[in-house]
Amino acid sequence: MGTQFNKGDTVAVLDDTIKGIVTDATNDTITIETNDGFLMSFETSELVLIKGEQKEFSKYIDIKNDYLIEKEHSSIKKKSTKRLKSRERPPLEVDLHIHQLTKSTRGMSNHEMLTLQLDTARRQLEFAIKKKIQRVVFIHGVGEGVLQKEIEFLLGRYNVSVQPASFQKYGFGATEVYIYQNQ
Image (cartoon, rainbow, N blue to C red; front, side):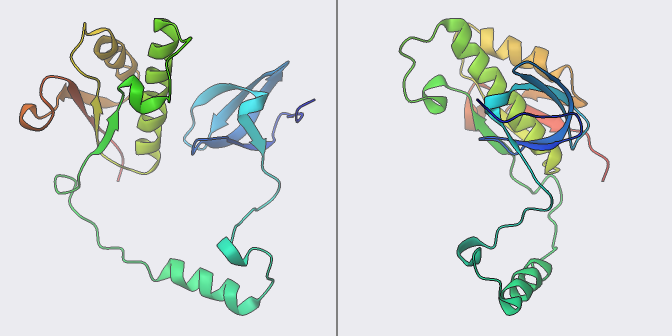
């Protein structure tokens, strides 16, 4: 029997950077509102309950040493805040070729492979939005264009502009996305 989730619980998605609050828990389907305000549904096996403020101090996790805790906090504050202009920052590159996303496609239907590719694209786009990364390049390949059309449909739900990525760098098989964000 898995973990029970209740409305209002704070949860994180396993194998992803998504966190949020449970808004609905029906059977094995849990709907959460992410920290970015998106409503998403997951199976209970994909979520983990976050209790209170959980913080890891790497290899010092079991040591309750005030000096080490203070050192951890001060090193976070000292990090450089120099920012590059958006046109100088490299884009987030997301390779959606199926062999980059799974060890083996044995037993996977075309629909399952396409779903894996689109889920990866959605997660990476939401990661870019959360981390305020303004440009993302989705490398989808040329093929028959099914994945490219599905990505364009997915991107239509977001506040982004879409254009073909640099032909010199990616050929015809990539789409560049510019994310409009409040700075």
